[in-house]
Image 1: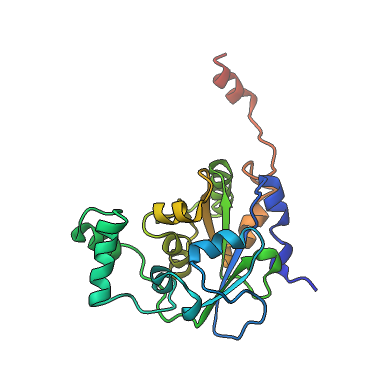
Image 2: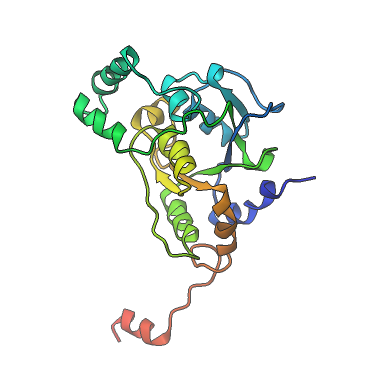
Length: 240
């Protein structure tokens, strides 16, 4: 029997024309049977999950030290490891100018969910056996725009987004820690290394907000509702 979350996004995906599979991310301490257990980068698992693969990732199977602690599977770096990370971000990746700007980047971002769970399950929502904690869409800018308006259709509360930092931090950790939906382009290293399409934007929704997102589709013009323009406004727009 299908789980509720496995089919509830079908209409949304069809209406918006999203080609990549929405990805379910679940943090769990339970043993999980289904899913690949292989060393993988979080950003790599995210890309492959949108194509249909499911991964079970624990500390031993997380290939990227940054992804390990950004997603809470390990402790943030300290001592020599922290110094190495400083060097890498400023002299290796060259994504920030100095150790001072590196410190600001780390200190002003949402904290990682350290110690949250033993493992993370990442795969297509349509095949997820566990209830997702977050759902990640990989879509183009127009589809992302529509998702944003559907997301706050009911309450009108503007998104408070975090676009900087690593892809795993902004697309996974930030929504998990804050309970907020987020839009991010990911970090340049992850995009280049995983060869994400140039037009891909990552939109993450905490699962508890998915119901409202789906319910807005037939009601909002960003979904399937017809746009209606009063005659007076139409005349004003046409300059008559």
